[in-house]
Length: 493
Ligand SMILES: *[C@@H]1O[C@H](CO)[C@@H](O)[C@H](O)[C@H]1NC(C)=O
Ligand SMILES: *[C@@H]1O[C@H](CO)[C@@H](O)[C@H](O)[C@H]1NC(C)=O
Ligand SMILES: *[C@@H]1O[C@H](CO)[C@@H](O)[C@H](O)[C@H]1NC(C)=O
Image (tube, rainbow, N blue to C red; front, side, top):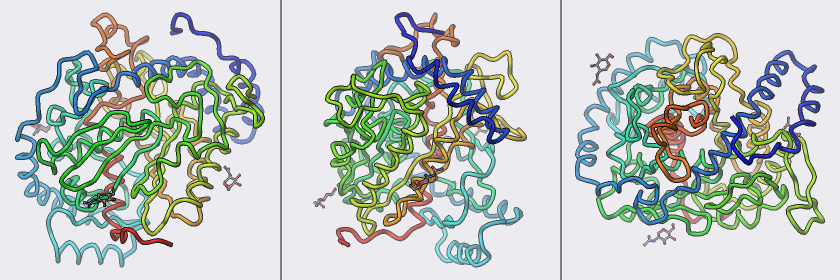
């Protein structure tokens, strides 16, 4: 598993001891710690491959050239036609959903909310009506095969997808992974992503994803979801203005952006293109250099997780330190809490709640231990063609739930600004079938047939194929944003 030239992480020996101390607290921790320890070395390899694929982003505007694959043709009118043909189907699906949900007992949504929903739908049927109750927990539910409504766009219809995520184009044969709808237990997600309505909401505004390559994965999905609302030639991507990638929606004077800050705070891995660094060091109290770029953004979507999984301890620069070498090792969860405390304080003091909506995406899980879902003969996530279904009890795929809880807690700790914690972890843990696996690129190149034949070494079970799971995460964001009144822009508090 180990890549040539890779060193042992200095923290690897000590850290499990620190974790064992905590394992007496709850029985579940025993299993958790066991899994964290057993997948630890694999994580390290995964994350090294992650950093190399991150480098391969297309360097030029609106092109997927730099990835070593043939350039995509310009967008034809096809997806636009498909889009304009959608409302009819959307309506039909909405009708079906409504019937289905009428049969289902609603545990959380109040009668009043249900009544309000029904009357609103009856008064103003059709696309664009989104009224998902704020109290409905979207994280609890089931994956339902739905090849009528999914995928939400076609892989070949989105010119902006990078070769990292176009799994079918990279040789994947089964496409079932694109066709699962998430059905929350207590309410319905919108049946479709209505790009025109969403772009109306975004008119004159900026939506920015801030974080690591999983958030970039989600940014790519969002670009594909909104782009059918835009005319050819009126949409383009500028790659890397500083740490930003910017999708421009010219007709709406709006942008959908991604900002590279894998730890949110400053670190030695902040170069968006060259950050394949063995020993990652963070400055847990320094956020201003990044955060200056987040000011005035209307929708901020944060995440930070995968880079924390590289080692059990985090290297933290000393307050008096002048160079990255001057650091201490801190237990992962403690460093994570400190960082999120810094983040929460910044949001509290710098975000205008009348103008800006803040979201925090929960942990995106990995699938590198097939024993965890009862497939001991499997090789990581390779050849998995269906979600985990009918599984009782917790699914131990190696998620660090301590970090998950800390992020939820930090989101609640921001008192002046409401932060929506978007919990996608447990639902995504079931999607062992949806990672890019060997149908991706590595160091800017498509995997060779030999590499594809060796998933134990080369399968990427961190990132997700598109169309796929991140589209559903974005549908959750869409549901939250579109169910709320549009904030008056420009108001100051
Ligand atoms: C959807 O799936 C069903 C069952 O697998 C199949 O019979 C049907 O042809 C599929 N429809 C489409 C549009 O792919
Ligand atoms: C375009 O949007 C920006 C905010 O992103 C705003 O400052 C600017 O005034 C807008 N321009 C027009 C012409 O509406
Ligand atoms: C939750 O957040 C509060 C406020 O930031 C902090 O004091 C506390 O330690 C956090 N608890 C956990 C379990 O992370």
